[in-house]
Image (cartoon, rainbow, N blue to C red; front, side, top):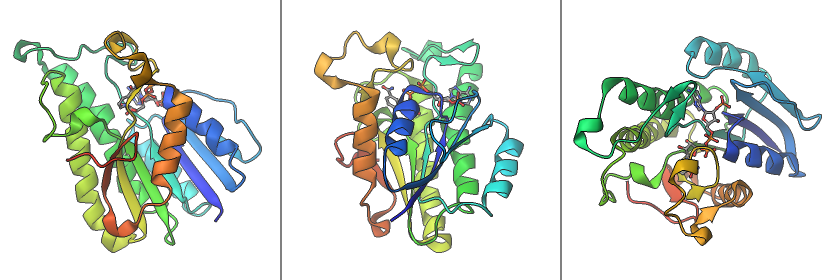
Length: 241
Ligand SMILES: NC(=O)c1ccc[n+]([C@@H]2O[C@H](COP(=O)([O-])OP(=O)(O)OC[C@H]3O[C@@H](n4cnc5c(N)ncnc54)[C@H](OP(=O)(O)O)[C@@H]3O)[C@@H](O)[C@H]2O)c1
């Protein structure tokens, strides 16, 4: 089956590795990447478009153009922030007193609302025969598996993203029933996002972006729409919501 892929947030560490793997896939027909950053296309079937996904009008304009061009078989939304967002420094909260409005707003804007907006419009972009939409969640977004505490804003914004995915899946079953929705936890990956928090991670548990991209493509390629939505980790195992 020919693949048409849309990748959102293309400048990030995991996104860059995904792009390389999609480009090397012989069944790729077309790859569209979007980002706030200008990037050079890597092949003739790769098109890159400048979009700030925090501005809904830019997403809508893009979707209005694309929906007559491609039916995407795979959509991956890589946006997320933990300690930096643009020029803003975020500090994952360690205690109740660290919580503040500005930081919550930023976490929820980038980690929850941006992927939610893409889910809103992606229903018009998916290949109706079969499609997979993956958003990057995190294990810390699991409400049932939270034994450690801390990171209030990041956790809550990823838990809220999981709820958006669960809720959207109900509607996708009606409007695009062959679409699979996935909330994905990549493990701890060696990118800018995890840099300040890598010291306590065992070397064997700090994954390269290349390994992560391989695993994501493997685990999301044969999912049955009947079971959608999925909350999966880097090993293909189900995480409790
Ligand atoms: N790395 C890890 O260990 C790890 C672990 C668990 C979950 N995750 C999740 O995996 C995803 C990818 O992470 P990564 O490690 O590749 O991070 P990264 O290298 O920091 O990339 C971050 C991505 O988020 C987008 N972004 C950042 N700030 C933004 C803002 N203010 N407005 C709009 N978009 C913004 C960027 O998009 P542009 O291209 O538009 O700049 C970029 O694609 C994130 O959702 C992250 O939460 C990562």
